[in-house]
Amino acid sequence: MVTRRRWMKTAAAYASGSLLAGGLAGGLSRQASGAAAPAAGPATGTGGAGLPNVLILMADDATYSDLPLWGGKNVKTPHLDRLASEGLTFNQAYMAMSMCVPCRTELHTGLYPMRSGCCWNHSPALPGTRSTPHFLGPLGYRVGIAGKVHVNPRRCFPFEDVPGVEGNSVSPTAKFDPAPLRAFMARDARQPFCLTVALVLPHVVWTVGDPSHFKPKEFDLPAYLVDTPQMRTDFARYLAEIEVLDQQVGGVLKALEESGQADRTLVLFTSEQGAQIPACKWTNYDQGIHTGLVARWPGRVKPGRRTDALVQYADILPTLLDAAGADPTKENFDGTSFLPVLLGARDEHRRYVYFMHNNVPEGPRYPIRSVRDRRYHYIRNLLPDEIYIEKHVMGLEEHNPYWLTWMFATESDPHAYAMVRRYMRRPAEELYDTQADPDELKNLAGDPNLTEVQARLSAELDRWMKAQNDPGADLDTHEVHQRRNQEARQYQKTGKVPGR
Image (tube, rainbow, N blue to C red; front, side, top):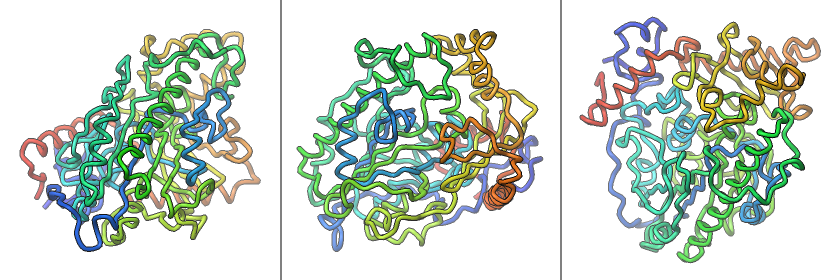
């Protein structure tokens, strides 16, 4: 049998026709059994009213530091602020890849990209991968998703589709009707639910909301942006979508209250990855892979608290199982439960969080890997002699008109040149002190005072890549990406796991 581990054994397997569809890493184990999602009937025994409901609210491309909860100064989010006042705010929550499909796959599977198989944007999970419905369904939950799904194949993510929320992230509008959400939550008080409401704001095209009341000339622009009139205008459009995001979050929370289920519901809000702006989405910089995370659970999570515990998207599904009374350690997750952090029993969870980037199909290959602890972030650019190109940011003027103004400004503005160069030309290694330099503008790699820190993080990154069977640069190719897509289409059609 061709196992996932053998499939990843050598880089030569990728370019050759020997890449049999067995997967990327690990082995077809408990987590990836290929089983269909069981029907979820009313919970019995310790289930039913004894299990918490789960409501996950997801933004779409909202840079965490643009939100007031994490220091944003240019927009107000009263509904998010209220949610945080009633729960726990995470200062250091992350995802392994700052792209829509891989990060959502990580959240719903508890796996890093290498083990889920979703190592590129718009790529499928490995055949047989199991997700939230497979784990919560047997506990009696009905598991639904509304809005932007962005995970596939469906056999791996058999959510109940809940209408009412726009699912197209580049739609010029953002349809929102909370009635179907309320109906799903109130359907049967005897049966717990898990509902993901994946909103499409503030993903480009930044046409939702009213930017006219902002005063772009008065913005406090982040230091990693280039200050041009077009950038300020586009930033206002982006902030207008954050305002609507906050309104829709408020609408979902109101629907939860009206359903009568709020007091027994664990609510999680996540800002997802950073915005479609250089140094945010599609990068391993902190503004991309850092997510805003808030948890509210009446009677269980003490309100108005903050924590510096390091957590990652892969930890969320194990935490949900733990909250429901199941033992997540019996499953083959990459993440671990941070339930003790939620309940106030601990203020630490991980020592390290881990990240990867494969640029295909969003541009030419430009693989990146990185690791960080609470303070320092070590980045390794695996092909530093190449230039970084992200085709959407740099090539679609209708979505990102500001980019040409950045380029034009480089002739006379040293900061503009530095930011464009930082985006396109990167050294082999980068090291940042995120406490002193949260925008990661001063590369400390090679600093003799940080030799031990750099060596420690570099060794930890090597360890993680080896444990994940990550071949590095050889993964970031069109051939591997296309082969994975073919494998997923075949699995969705036949239901058979290749190589088994």
